[in-house]
Length: 250
Ligand SMILES: Nc1ncnc2c1ncn2[C@@H]1O[C@H](COP(=O)(O)OP(=O)(O)OP(=O)(O)O)[C@@H](O)[C@H]1O
Image 1 (cartoon, rainbow, N blue to C red):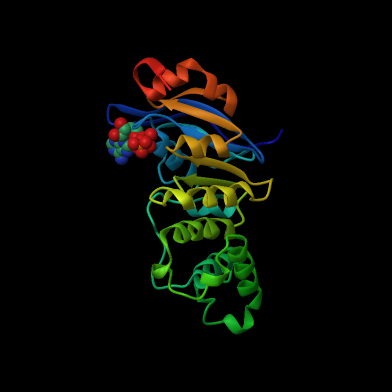
Image 2: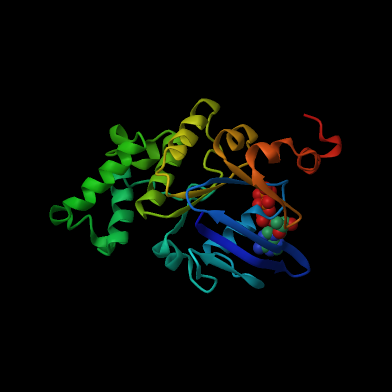
């Protein structure tokens, strides 16, 4: 097993509050992980430390053995670590083809001027169209993003992250706000991503967590409470207790 991403003794304090408490965890290449925990457990803070949005108080983050603790979010994306966001951050007037094309173009080093140079950059368009096809967005690729159903917009967010060719992908509640009947479509597409992409899903919906994840990490009060095979975590009475509140019913 190759370690794709790991943290070592990671700590983040906000004043007197310890939001990340000495977290040491490894994510193995190609595995599907979910990160769960009660509200305020520190999931978003941990993701922000992994992606470089926040700097830790102490400890380190390693990507494929390289210490990336000092890298900016952009440098991390370039190094193979991409994320989607909880809040919709797409450009509403741009089409999916333009949006994914922009990400492909940035990755290839053509920069933001690619659309004006489109005639000479057909490889950008071809790759963007192929990614959109994989996400079931071919029919929608020429319309402004703002007119797409919400579930399709969320798929587009993941498509943009994939256009960066990540080896590790962090998905922050990718199905939040999506109607029930479209939720599994999103996770099915994520499950079908290439096997060598390591995925860490942050999700409150336990149905999605258990249908998606091979392994689950549980955070409680900023600390790593447990990490293990999904079925073991699901069966652990201590997890039920902290996660479900009093008594661990259900
Ligand atoms: N920028 C900040 N400044 C001060 N405290 C913060 C900051 N960000 C998070 N916190 C605190 O850190 C703790 C962990 O928050 P975090 O958002 O990481 O938890 P979470 O598990 O993602 O919660 P939720 O499931 O509700 O999104 C909380 O007590 C929160 O109030």
